[in-house]
Image (cartoon, rainbow, N blue to C red):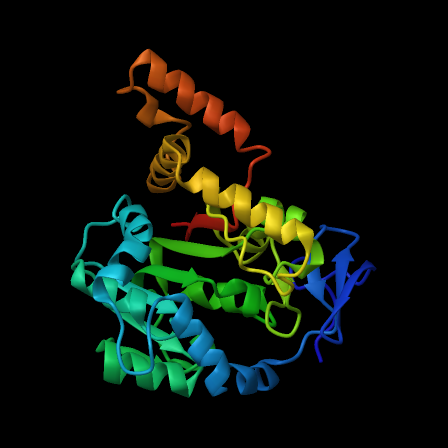
Length: 324
């Protein structure tokens, strides 16, 4: 078992919740909500190797044991491909850490990147190679023997929350990046509207697999502690009412009904457009992309940015650079 805050190393905490027989606490020093105690990687791997876990993972991306939808995968990862294209042209080297079934590796390769991945699950690695046709090796990042400064870009999509020792793994990512190389991280946002509405039933609060629950502050802090220069942390207004462990609660039923109606409005469609602009301009000076907009759109965009202080989606995306 691993104890103490995985971000700041502090030992002072207070109880937050108990779920599925495991505890969640909040660090009194940095505010991170994390599993206490945290299981080591070897114990977690047993869960990731289970057939039921992998089938549920595939279902979330519209895939089955023997096939997947390439167009669905391209659409799913389109925002991230747009983001990394702001820093490097396709043709540069990219490593996707914790790449699962290799879907992002495949999407990046098709977009022109020299992309490969590492994945600790043998089941995920075999699927990536056999079904997806992605270049994936079965290893932890720390054991993958990647040379110093061996990649232009490293991505960690829905990974950092699973890491028993995130600072250690992030430092390894910094080591393999070239000077000036870029790291892109995505993770559930603890301050999301979904978590506030669904409470402790929110499925991202799952201490058996999600060992740390980041918000913008704690995600930025862990990246800086690992030696990165933080460029931006963005929240994406992606809401999934069905991501809950209890669909019998009235909060879930109301949230789902309201969300379904909002998704059909042109207003929500415009919000998603703003989100995409925000993401692909992450790391740039404040709002340079407002210059080409008319007065009405500029006003709408500023109103959106103010609303984002309160209306937070489920996903955080951070962009950081290796100094040098």
